[in-house]
Image 1 (cartoon, rainbow, N blue to C red):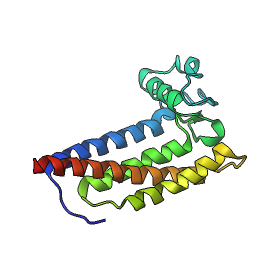
Image 2: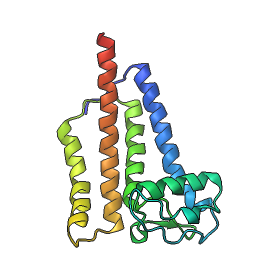
Image 3: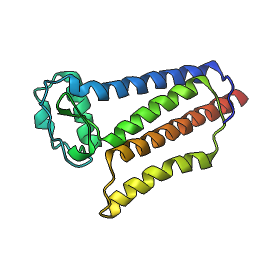
Length: 176
């Protein structure tokens, strides 16, 4: 990666994306602390469903929305999730790793421009592909530490790739 300063428009957009990703990650982490202890114990379900909506009815609006999104976008299998305040988190460990990785990646690219090698992105996505793919296709069961690491690496390289696309768009607009 080559570091250099970049135009203001791109840096403003990246700073906004960085702030949004940090805010989202903070909301996901603090959501279990926003509800009474022991309120949400097992949210196991499937991606794309809303099996747990009844459990969210008594929640205040902010944690309700966060958990509702988690219910729609994550399997929320209890064994693959962390618990805070005796409450299951709204997203699984791997998703949390992705969110943290993206927040840190966008933090890096907010201050440094680089040219990304596509091989770097592919190599960064291999671990999550192997770990998640083996779990989906075989009886292999990963652990939460590995899920966190593979999610983090994937989130980090995805944020670098997305920022690279913003750099390319900015350069193309400057040439016109």
